[in-house]
Image (cartoon, rainbow, N blue to C red; front, side, top):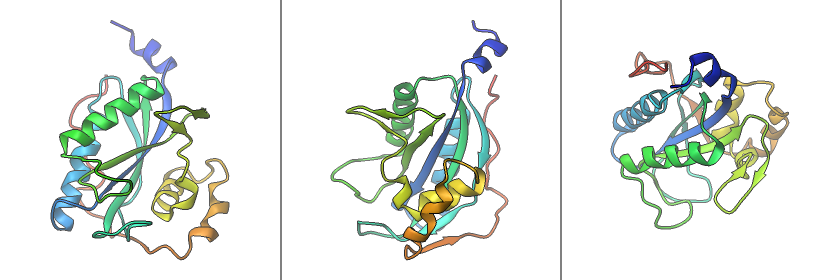
Length: 181
């Protein structure tokens, strides 16, 4: 077993984008995001450090119903591909299918940034290659990390994308389902 201090020393802060637009009405989509948030918080050695508001967005480069979106900051001991695979397992647990690019989704978890790592691999590119082109990523991300990588300068280019911050709710951000220790 690794001591808590050792695990913390090897951890990295990652930012994860969350979205859902299939599976029911707004209350059901919110429940999906709450469940996904709790699943990430329950990953061994992980801690959710910050969570954005919930946002409603119109799909970009795709059709389908509106999305509910959020971003969270997650302290993780996993390497980037390990975290990606953990996020994909959470997606699959919520019925995620990938029939075509930008298809509507029961749950979408995107690894946006992993510390300051820059990576270009077949399975993963960091930072996320399209995050600077998506208001539904930039606005929630800047809400919790306003000084992150000069991203505020990208906002004018996405000003035409329909995005609405939803009113605060008692179930968002959720409470962690399990201890992170």
